[in-house]
Every structure is written in structure tokens, then in C-alpha cells.
Length: 279
Image 1 (cartoon, one colour):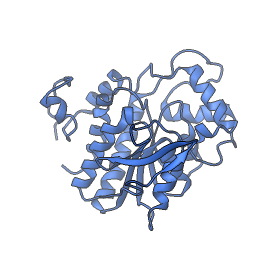
Image 2 (image 1 turned 45 degrees about the vertical axis):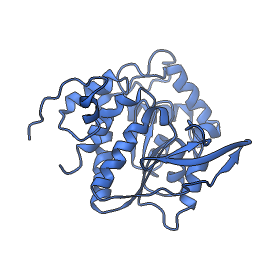
Image 3 (image 1 turned 135 degrees about the vertical axis):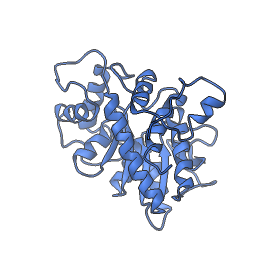
Image 4 (image 1 turned 30 degrees about the vertical axis):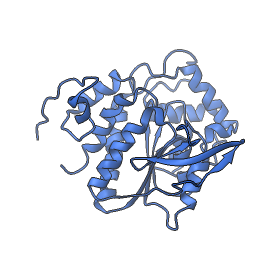
């Protein structure tokens, strides 16, 4: 089937809204949008120095970077760099310590399509799916659009640990709230950027039966993988823990891309996922 030509997205209006409903796009259109939005391409948010620093701290045992995953210190920084380079498509030479970190947009597209196939299967089989993000300032619109797509095609979306239940971390109130079926860590007043696994640990602990599938990032994804739940995860190029878990054989689909550009720019990620669902 030939894809219809779609005009370049505008920042407002009806056209903008339709980008969050399944359309027909050429792969080349989506790849161009990934690069234009800085989700992938020759220059992303994190340069080589930042990536190297994060890799070293991961293998040294920094819990902030482990996302609740065990076994992250069993590798050298160079080994983890090679894993990340394979997933993202950049030069793995450890002697390169400065300059931008590239992400191959075609690899991102193929990973998104793989995620779409698994999510479409979950919907067709009426599986129980849990979605959550530790990066609500960037990814929330995309997750909400995927949640709507899943519901429309038959999946059951879970919202464990929802409501007034809360806990305290370092003296601060923490609770989980759902935005159109997507879990986010909050302090009750604001949604929070989070790397920690505690929220997902509590969400899973609130269920008598684990989800069939989790789609998440950061500590939400890490805790689900650690618990043995099948997980699709998003990982930025400087957040290597899910990629290490993939190389350990503990998870299969990890989408390596910039996870905190403008929320509207992720429409192309949604469209790549939606392209794998029945029309």
C-alpha cells in the first residue's frame, strides 16, 4: 500500500493533533523527523565526555545509573561502551573522548517498529500492559498516545498503586499518578524526573499477577526487568543499564534514542510504533 504524502507538521492546529493518531508515513519521513527533532542523528543531547562519565560510574556501582538492575558492575567501561555503540550506531573507539555522540536514526526506527510489533501482539492477545515514564517532561505524550492505541485494539492497561497511597523518600512525599493510563512519579504537586526503581517495585507489588508486558524507561523499566517481567524500554545514549541488561539476555527490545527533547517531536516515534498495528 502506498503511503499518502503528509505535509510537514505545524506547531499547532488540527494537523498537529492528527500526528498523534495513526497515519500512513514513509519510513524516510519518520527518519527525517527523528533527525529534525534531535531524537537521533549526528548530534544528540549528550556528548562523548558525558557518555563516558556515565559508563564509568555505572560499572563503579552508582545506584543512580543502575535503574534497579543488578549485575551492572560485572563489565568494564569499554565493554559497556561497545554495547552502547552497537545499539546506537556510533564509533566504539574508547580513545574518542570528546565531540558529539551520534545515534543512527534507522536503528531507532527499527527498534520502534519492533516495539510496535510486540505491543500490537499484546493488544491482539488482550494482554495486561503497564506503561510508565521517569521522563514525563519529554516522553509523556508519546506514551499516552501508545496507551490509547493499545486500548483501542484490545489490551488491558493496568494502574497499580494508584490513589492517595504514598511513601516518603529522603523526607519527601512520593506517589504515583496516571496520565491517561501512564504512570508517573509525583510529589503530589508535580511530576518528577526519576531514575530510581522504587515506584515500579511498589506498582508490581500491588498486583496479584505480574503484567504480561511493561513499556517504560529509567527505573520503571529497570525494576520491571529485574523482576523478570517482559519489558520494552527506552534508554538514552548515556543511560546504559537497559542495554547492559539486553546483552545479559534479560530483556529484548531497548530503544536507544534521546529521551528528553520537546514532547511534540516524539510524534514520529508514536507513528513508527502505530505502523505495526492493524489499520
